[in-house]
Length: 237
Image (tube, rainbow, N blue to C red; front, side):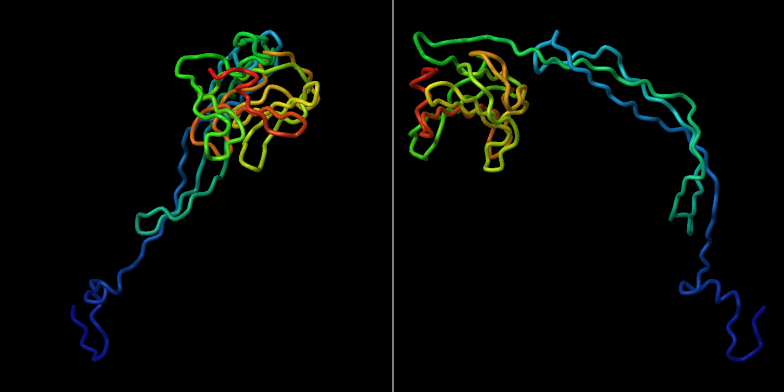
C-alpha cells in the first residue's frame, strides 16, 4: 500500500533502495576435528657419524575436537573464537638419534703438510685461489651442501659459531708454530671452542651461510697472523 502522508517514503521503496539495505548478523556454533602436531625429540649418540641422523620412532599426529563460535555479517565470517578443545588422540613424538662421532679421514696430496679440508665428492672443484685479482684471502672449494669438512691439521678449536663479517658459520683452529686455519660458510658445526681435533677429523659441513653465492668451503691458512696461500699447504686440487 502506498503511503498517503507527504514526505514519508513508501516502506517498500525504502527497503528496495540500494542505500538502505538491512545487514544480517548471525552467530553459530561449529564443531570440527583438527590435527595436533607431534614434537621431535633428538638424542645425541657417538655411534653415528657427525652430520647423520636416524629416526628410531616415527611421529604420529594426534587429533582434537574444537568448538568454535562463528560470527558472520551478510554471509561473510567476521570473527571466530574457540569455545572449547577436547583431545581425541594424543600425538606420538618422533624420536631421532643425532650423530656426534667425528670421523678421521685424512686425504693428503703427496707430501703436502696439511690434508685436503673437504671430502672429495662428485661436482667438487676449486673455484678461487689466493691472489686471483680481487683480494681473496683463501681458497674456495665448491661441494654440495652437507659435504663433510675436515681439519686440515690437528689443533685446538678457538672459534666455532656465527661470524658477522660475512663468513657465516665458521671454525678457526689453532695449530703449532703460529699456524691457524679458518673454515667458513659452513651449514653445520660439529665442534665447539676448546675441542681438540686430529688431522682429517670431521669438524663441520659445507654450506652457503654469510656472504656467499653458492655452497662451498672458504678455507684460509694464517701464519703468525698473516694470510698464506693454502695451495702451498694442501695442494691445488
